Image 1: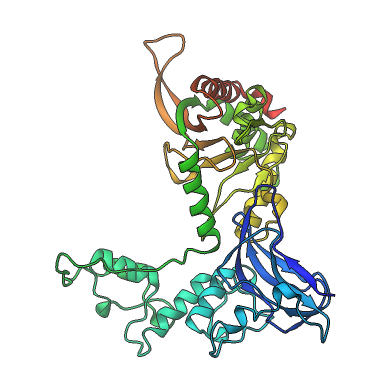
Image 2: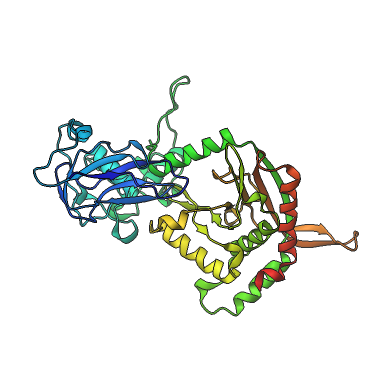
Length: 439
């Protein structure tokens, strides 16, 4: 009997997934548990496995299509078995186009976005370098190959970044000597070269396109989620400045007792713990808006936005209020490392109730973040900066304090400004009287 393959649901709020790649072809024999396709979840690529041994048949969706969860995407048939009536028509993928497609060896690891570009530009994988995590072919490997292929005579060998900088600095690459492999021009080579005149484009023409970024996978999900958030949730923003001197002293003191460098407590871990305890007192920020009611969660699961090469992902520290700050820091390091190596599991991203976005390490003083749906609030964290602050007791004395600005974006459908203000003030108390955070 034909076995249906459905689009799996990896999270409780997930409604759709995008097909990024078919790993098996129409009519190919598969074993139970074999990965047959790669699909996108909420900012994560996951493999769909064959539920039975048999022949993959009746593929219903092409690469790039958005498919609702639980919908049938293909079937597994026994040899000689025919498709069910609903799937008896000729599969779409089998009739897409007739052309030679480069064969990808199953031993070569390829990122989903790189695979998309390989198929689009008909690239022989054996010609690509493999600089990604674990020897994986990355998007940059494919783009570097295309840059070389588009210049077959080898007159100018330059990295894409060097070409961009050369254009910005008005440097003629014909006069630049490359210092990279095979005399390839690097960014540093361009910077050493004096500016030379370039021909200015006539006004009125369209701007030159530097690069086209396909709106697929993670980028599409981020675009859809952020547009949905701004469209549906009326954002209100509140800011508060917090003195971090005492918290930093206690953090550094705790780290002096930790010999393992990878286990040392980060400032982000301290903030996660403080946020979790402030939420415990004012749980309205830990909620979700629905059409009929507001769900206020007792579980405090803090997501921490993490930058990747192709976008943004939000791994979650579950039950953050119940964990010591040292354990939170270790969990953050582990999640961040696995996120950048594309090794996160669905449960690492599931059930977040509140999000923190920290750009302080980039020197950003303050910024406003967009709420991560379906949550009701997100906290933007800036850099810790030294500022001159009047003394609390003697107004005539100016002291240098380590200050940090927090900006809360909250869904006004769920809470009012005073509720958000209570939460921020509790967060300030937690960080300015931080002894409780280090217990």
